[in-house]
Image (cartoon, rainbow, N blue to C red; front, side, top):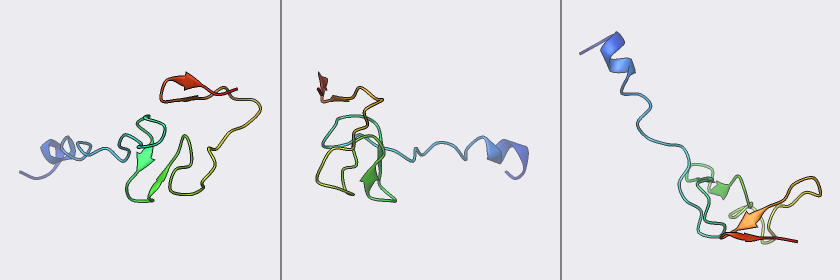
Length: 61
């Protein structure tokens, strides 16, 4: 096949998988870091004052 039918097969693989630290589907295996908690980038969990965050289902204060 070529052309239009082939384009439907281009979005099968996801860019994010489940993170080991926060449990969310935010870990990017290509960049080796989690978009939600920063696993792989920093030892501390990425947090902002304007955001409430849950890590493994537990809300951080």
